[in-house]
Length: 331
Image (tube, rainbow, N blue to C red):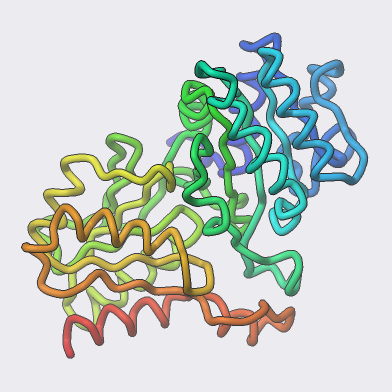
């Protein structure tokens, strides 16, 4: 049996492979160079191997993202690491008003190959300004694609897909995933990846379908296990790599047609969310077949506390997912 590969190791290997393959690729960010290798050690060793193209920058998310956009505008490739994704808000102007618009505002489509990596999410006790999940604020911007790190998707393939889009991409990475193993689920569940969507299921038709990004997949799986054991409710989990533009492959549509009940889980506060976009897509395709409206499951509205017990209550967790699905299916 092979050694377990952690998500952080897979991500680091993907960046190393891209740097070796693409001589015009630059990796930029605060403290990404050795010996620090980034706040979460994702870029460890890269500046030693590629000293001219893995560069630590001043503390200015707006400036770093602007430099990356300039590199992309001139034909190079760029990956930016935002130390904590909360501060992607400081780079929002560069993404909204320069990078994404540059794809099409010059009269013909211009490739803009850049990725902004954003470590996000709670569960680490970092408090209100270092624990947010800001995905919803980047959904719906033309020529800006939104992806999320997943333990089921190989990161080299994800980066290749993002660069192939030739438009700016924001890659959200839930911090709690970095130490988790790649591609592992416990029986009776099994996982398969098709069309950019990981499908975690048991044998037989599901009672419901749950759609969740990678950062909350493990919490959703824990709820699915307890629902199966305690309530005899069978769920199928769909984990998309690309959040926006959102689409579902044919086999995911087949799951929804069979189950007729759909839930969306996300670690954000309610209102104008990615989950609402998913519900829109599902409603448009399946409204006549659904037994009930798509149910959205969010974190609590409010800032994220530092204290562990308060933080757990504020964030979407196994208990909230379990309760929402049980109540909707059992009445």
